[in-house]
Image (cartoon, rainbow, N blue to C red; front, side, top):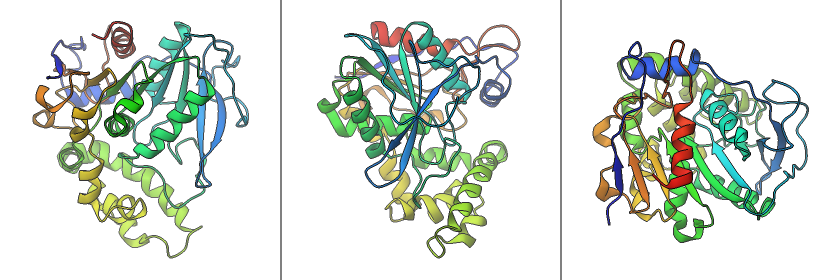
Length: 346
C-alpha cells in the first residue's frame, strides 16, 4: 500500500515570499514563547551523558529561563494511565532554546502533556565526555532515549517528534525497529533531511553555504577543536579547522569518529528515506517544498513510504520555519499541525 499525501499549504505571510526568508525569520524574529524546563542528566551506557529538559504538569519552574538550576539526577513527572507525553528531538546544533522546540513544547504543555527534550551530546551547553558527538543517523541514541523514557513513564501514551537532524534519526530508528516501535502512539518528523547526499550538497552551494553552512561550521568546529585538546592526536585537527563545508567537515570528523568509512558512506547509510517503507508507527513526515536544506525533487513519493506514513509537503514553510500570522508572525502553525496528526491521524 502507498503512503498518504497531503499537499495543503502552510499559510505563510506574503512578506515572507520564499524558503530562505521563511527559514531565517522564524529562527530569529518570529514571536516565541518563554518557557522553563527542569533538567535531568542521563548517563549513557558508554560513559557519556545526555541532558533531558522536562516540562509538563507539576514540572515547570517559576521562571522564564530555559533551564533552572543544576542538572537533577532523576525527574519523575506526575502521570496517570493515559497521560499523553511527547519526546521532541532537536536539529543540528539545536537545543531546548530553539524556536521550534519552544513553540511545540509550550503548545503541548498547555494541553496538559508531559514534554521532554533530549539534547544530543554536546548540545546542552556543556561539552560531552567522549571524542564522539552525534550525527544524523544516530538511531541507536534515539532508541536508548526512547527505551529509557518508556521505562520511566510506562503508563503514559507516548508520542515522538524530531526536527531536521533529529527527525532524520528518529525516522531511521522507526524504520529499523519496525513493529517493535509500535508502543509509540504516533510520531512526526519535521524538515528532516531525508536524503543526506542531496541535502549536504545543496548546503554547500551559493546562498545556502553563505547563510547556513557557515553558521553550522562555526559552532561545530569550535566544539570539536576544543575537544581535541583533551584527546591529542585523536582528530585530524588541520582538516577539521580548514573544512570549507559540511562535506569536508563530515569527512574529517563525523564519519571517522562515528564508525563510517567516509562522508559518502555516512551520508548514504544515515539517510532515513530508504527506511520509510519499513515504518509501522503512524508517522507524519512534514517537508516544505521550498526547504533550502533539501531540494524538492528528492522528497519521497507515495510508493517510497509505508501506508502508515503521511507525507505532508506544503509549498511553503522553509526549513523548520512555518511562520504564520501578522508581522512579526508567530509559530503556532507547526504545533497545531502536529496536534491534528497526533489526535486524528490526518
